[in-house]
Image 1 (tube, rainbow, N blue to C red):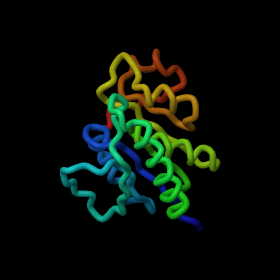
Image 2 (cartoon, helix red, strand yellow):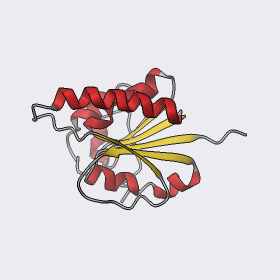
Image 3 (tube, rainbow, N blue to C red):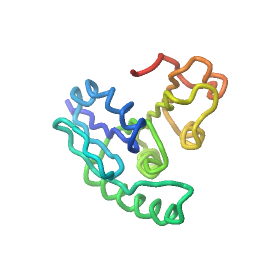
Image 4 (spheres, rainbow, N blue to C red):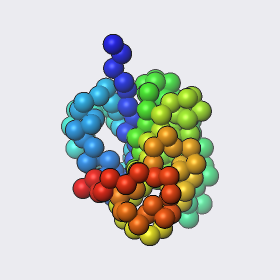
Length: 154
């Protein structure tokens, strides 16, 4: 029987911390992490990690970094061939999420714990494409009516 391969994707900071709360799931499946390259070091355990450029929509390099991340994501996707992408956001991860959907793979998105009454820009985009979309606050079901509420991942 084939083991599912899962891509766990998140930008740096709090989104990445939320992703790492899924470490038991990472250990259960053949998996790898896609995140942003930062100046600080993080312990990934024994996970394979790929890095994308950090993206800030307010910087002049925004479009360039998104294009670079698109090409990096294509390369990572075809090297690893994941069956699913689990993402906690944000911008830098959009290319990997969309490539997975275009290739007919499962896309699972977990909206940020920090969002209690409004959605993130990335969440609002991915909501339209996600096979499963989770929110961590019950009141977020008014923002994302088809989402699944299971509580926080912390």
